[in-house]
Length: 114
Image (cartoon, rainbow, N blue to C red; front, side, top):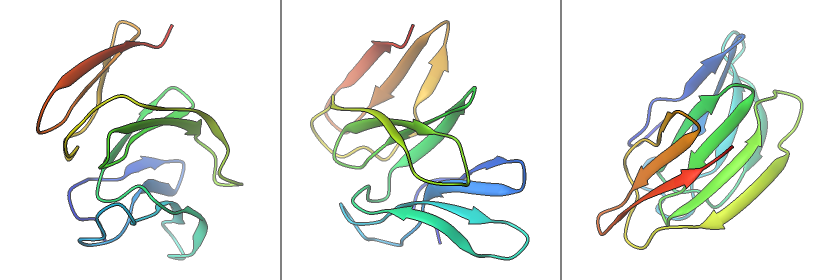
């Protein structure tokens, strides 16, 4: 179950944070829509949000970490991670023109992903 976010749906798989009120602990998972099977799970994201940018999964953890990972059902492969925000992050990231926009309860940031 998702607390705040709607998972990313791609090619029969859901990618997102699954765990109700598991602040700082809910995993980022890939779930097969047809079978309900969890294919991979990475702990420590909390009830954050994720979006797809091409073949990259962009996850904003509830503690302010922005994580870039492969958008693949085969395995979790983290490409980059940075702690960019203070405060709680419960809103979806946005992407436009090569820039990622994220916000928390305290601040916002624009990250150039080119």
